[in-house]
Length: 233
Image (cartoon, rainbow, N blue to C red; front, side, top):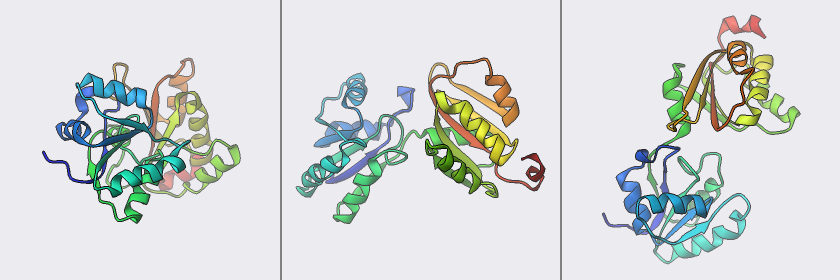
């Protein structure tokens, strides 16, 4: 497989290393540079597959400085791969900033699809997946969080949130207060050894988690608004 110049958006496993694609491995081995959130984490991934290549950090804290550097490399008709810590780059990470800049500079952007925690959680949730909304992480401040949730009260599509394990209970309580006792699915540690999927009404899931300490990455899927939800808030 020949590597043409451009910015390759390479999806990497969200846990199970067997989920990486052959195309992703080829691209990571042959590009001129790999931009990644954490060079140590990506370095371990490459080592597992016997790949040696040049890594450069690209994250929320250095994106303003790194973007011009990477654009310079790309302008020399070279190939750069962008990867996140796990999953598909550009979703709830700084990759979007680089992707947009590359497009604005007329640089070809090439997707290399693969694992995504969002889609993995959605398809096993059992909630409608034909139409959905991705909300990502809610703001940390209480007022802003509530405002975002209030905007979703009448949303009929399935809603997807990302949340840290330590703030999961807070999020579920807020969903119950603002959106009502809707059906929710909590997906934890997807594709990993301790993968867990918890389904039920908000109140039921809260009860199931009441005496537990939650760890790992979490995706929360919430059913859309239905007329009968009106009396549950």
